[in-house]
Length: 254
Image 1: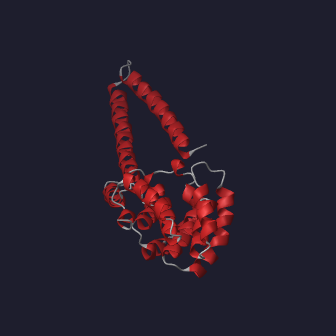
Image 2: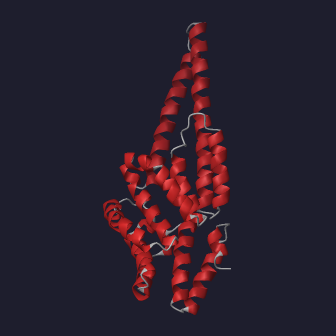
Image 3: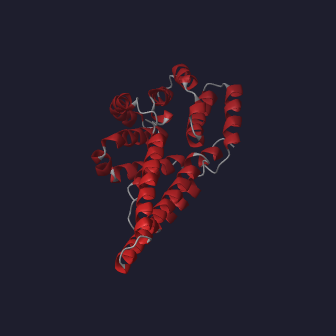
């Protein structure tokens, strides 16, 4: 089941539970019970729904930050929105999720050293959450690619591909974590341009959000330039510019 579907089911179940709870509290308040009982249930009703509303407010802020970085390709705006969220989150509910958000941000800002530092500083977190290990290895791999460090990429390649195979059935896995993109980058780095081109061509950007498209198109564009496929590179550049946004990736093709 896709993560979005899981969230929809979760929201529906919570909505039903809140409705049942609200009806029960209101029916008790308006029933012939003692004043003390009425006051207790009224206070409980207000408290629970105040917490629920504030929780939804925090979720709204989180979704706005994700939308900015993923769908609008505006990492700077997304980072500001997430910092705003953390300042208003007394429960620290979104503190750990910031670790994952930072990997998106530093990759989008083309800051591989900061990306590696973020991954290294939070290795304990990744290893405690097995489903996030692919995030760790992918971002190490991608950062080393941006740093033109082939030897480091080789070390990350085997565990990354093994995890990709294990996670392949997860329908919400980013296309950038797929073996086609992983191999396309590796072959690009080893200057096996024709084979790298085949892997890029085999990917479908229509399944990607704006952020993912920028990373995909940017490296495909660079490959085409290296292969002197100027017309293809120009077509890719036009597609990137249509995405707009404020990602520094767009500055690289101006």
